[in-house]
Image 1 (cartoon, rainbow, N blue to C red):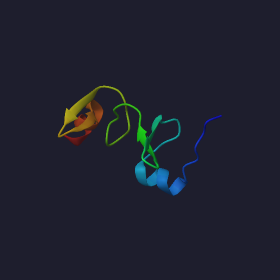
Image 2: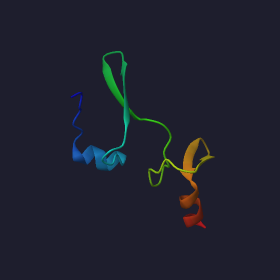
Image 3: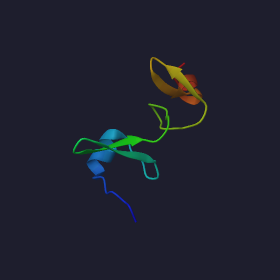
Image 4: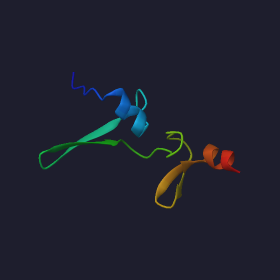
Length: 66
């Protein structure tokens, strides 16, 4: 089925929630996992993102910070 199991400790540390899509690439002899597409660095939302210092932040998190 093409699945990779990521230990819960690593998922919590990297804030990888269930259902989050990851890109799988090879770099030399390493398998590299990256989030697919942009997500908010605070809540992992993919909606209404704004660029901020090279990162993505959703509008709701911006408003919550005020």
